[in-house]
Length: 86
Image (cartoon, rainbow, N blue to C red; front, side, top):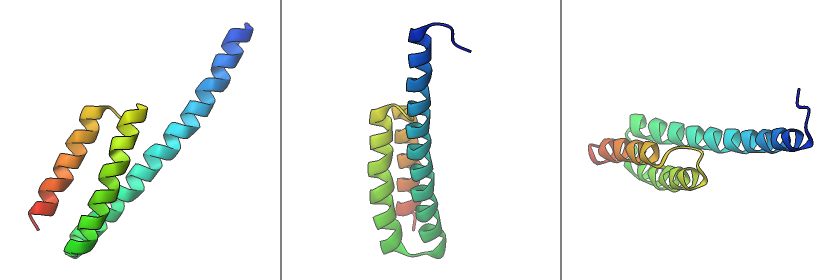
């Protein structure tokens, strides 16, 4: 339990950031799953559209610091390879 006012404020800020980061990570996972489903179904157009959306969202998450920029780049690269292999 925090004893100082500054630590109490920091705890509130941390909780707000945690919830925001959780929402961003969840959205990225959902969009990645949509890409995976379109890819496994063999639907090139749907997979291409899903890749565009998840790529944009990964860049946004990396900008906000939710995921590391190299992690975002690696995930995008892996999806692009799978997409081009269709």
